[in-house]
Length: 373
Image 1 (tube, one colour):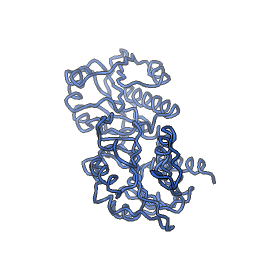
Image 2 (cartoon, helix red, strand yellow):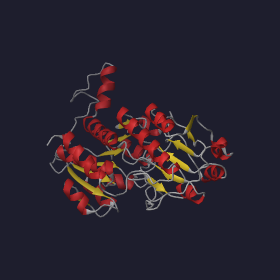
Image 3 (tube, one colour):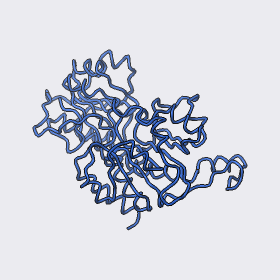
Image 4 (cartoon, one colour):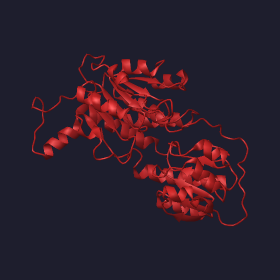
């Protein structure tokens, strides 16, 4: 079976499983009863703060919503700007704290839609306390982020960014040239997945097709989910890092996972694969900034304890120009573009539009209810 078919099979399997996904910061039960939303019969006002695909904006309008697209400052949010809207749809650029949500709920606000998976920029408990329902799109960008993970794995294993930069600056960095690094194959290496939601399961299928041995740790994972994908579940994050030369992060950012991956964890990683190849140790992060301790990662890269860190997410975004990672050998960074594909953006927009319209109509969305008021 080819890699694309393996990925498709894993995504299909994931779609039918009720398991935690990356970014779902809290476990809320999807309600079996309709969601109660007051509606006077007037058009529902929906604010879009961080942009949506044109098709999604059209879908909202076709559903009877009066749509406004504009960004809001933190001061405007706290002052109650959301009170004029029945729903707000955000991405990662907008943070909704409890005070902004309560101020909005004092007016018309009843629904927050997160166009994406992660809800760590929303105070879900605060929304619940204010009577605001939170919905997201947990499956819309899965395929895109799976492919992004694979791209970073390949880039790290073969040191592709450094080779590209060298070529542009007139250096022919083909080993054994000075400054070059001999790459290694992914086949025959151990890949560890920290987290085992939809994205991790898609990565597992693709990695297995490449000949990698795949391991995972998640307190929520079950053997009946892992076994069909050929994944071995390990009892702790520590054992995962001891076992795998390549580790990819796919867990949610929570108080328990913040700075989970630090210097001690990185020192556990083997630099030799089970096939005997000196492949180095590689950390991939497409989950959330803050799970990896970036200062510890930078120190490990400088010390050679860690060969590469390929990350699409950072604790502070955009990444500051003086961030210590930018001066590290083996660092590969991208500006949070894991879900930034045409296909994913269309799915994200259409799915969040459908979910918000459903809640405003008093119905339960098919997927993505994070917190129910």
